[in-house]
Length: 133
Image 1: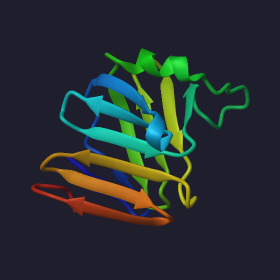
Image 2: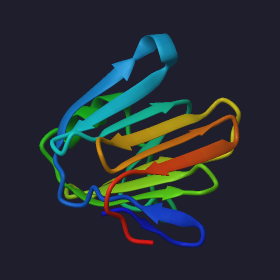
Image 3: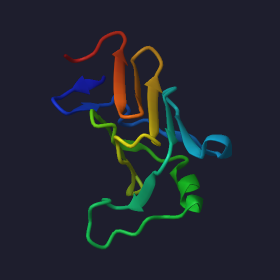
Image 4: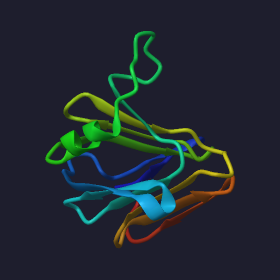
């Protein structure tokens, strides 16, 4: 279930497994597909780290590391109303997208549950079916 808080949505992706990661050169982006049918599409700067992105010793990981997410479980996925996205995986990897920039497009959708799009500084969350108010 998706839960709305004052500044964010807790996305109902916990426990889902990453089934594929693809880089899209035509849009300079990334697409993660999950076994629950959800899809995360990011165009623009995205940061993959091992551990929290705000830790003092954090090191951004290369594009080759993205494939290590395949088969891992989502521990947390949060979409912020500012347009930021944060996901934590069972491997300890953290995916971070800063929101608000005009060059950043973040789209997370889970069929029959939600569709969140943040583009050009404007975000829209559409909820379907049973959700927590």
